Amino acid sequence: MIITISRQLGSGGRSASRIIAEHYGINVYDKKLIELAAQESGLHRQFFEQADEKVSRSFRSFLFGSRSASGHGTATGAGSPLSGDALFKVQSDVIRDIAQREPSCIILGRCADYILRDVPGLISIFITADLDDRVRRYAKHDKISDAEAQSLIEKGDARRASYYNYYTQRKWGDAAHYDLCINSSRLGIEGTAEQIIRFVESLSAAQERNS
Image 1 (tube, one colour):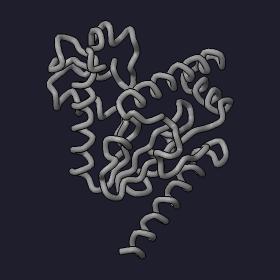
Image 2 (cartoon, one colour):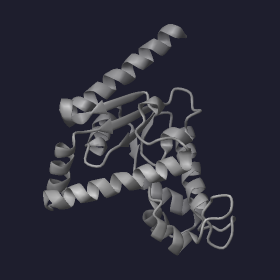
Image 3 (tube, one colour):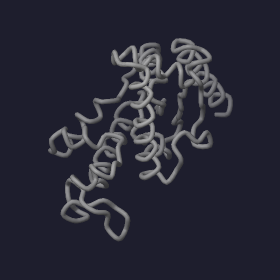
Image 4 (cartoon, helix red, strand yellow):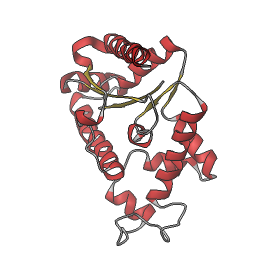
């Protein structure tokens, strides 16, 4: 039971994932993926932190160099350990390794739903929320104004969408690419987690009936 959760900033997806993980007694992989990718590659984790779910023009120009004719970002060539594609590949390999090593876990973001799309039994979730709720939650968490929170949310979601769209050739948040899309504003964080658990158990029951 590999669950991937993509989410809008401020939607409470991280909190919901922890509730689900506690219910099943499984691990959640979020920022820990950066640490594992750094260990796997031998590169400083700063490279992965700066590139985390971002495909910004300024950062690509600074770190990856200009885009090659094939459309891929390069630093000193396609084989550079700092190319955008190389960093993505390292992180993708780490995600696949986790999915093979752990029969059940939750992975947040980082195109995991696409990377693991051929894994049998994969369950992909997208969590959204009303903008007012997202702004209020983000402002409270970071102790900033609502205006600052909304600006950060809009920029953050744009970065996530750009990253996802670039590496998957899909559209971030498009319901067609997820097993379940849910608005946490309707049920609250705990209610959202509970609904996802019900959905997961319904899928498991259906698989048993069909086996």
